[in-house]
Length: 183
Image 1 (spheres, rainbow, N blue to C red):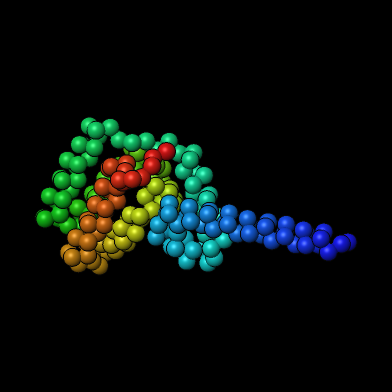
Image 2: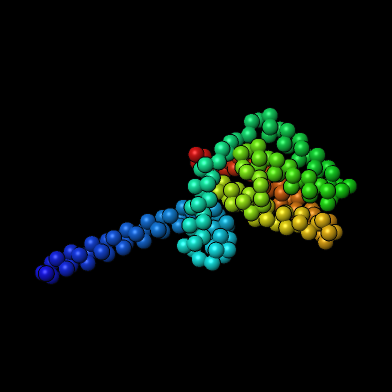
């Protein structure tokens, strides 16, 4: 084999390796941009980037099969009134209001087309379009779970309401953000 052929093979291998590395970097950037903080959360949960990225791509595929739809203007207005009612209840019954906020967010998710059976699956399904507000949902859910046994302060319950509101607003506005392309 001549040295010219060997050099051509080496160059071809290097080009292929570089192309694969570039392709993987583009895919990683896409996942980081789409999932935000949820990307790092998935890496930590899964124990490796490769496993996390496989999980996040599976979430995208599942999400593509869902019938997620925007809300009609009248539905948005009704949900806004419902949220205001929940906030009013907080003054006299903070623990119950947090439960109502959770139920309202779940009802909103369902109307948008997200499956609502099982908290962990809700997180995965929401992460595709609402990854930037998912930590709010986790924090609110954690406080709600503890509130049943009187293990929370009014300030923690207030914080849960703020966290639920962040996800609620994101779902209510269909996740629209300036400069964001919708599929």
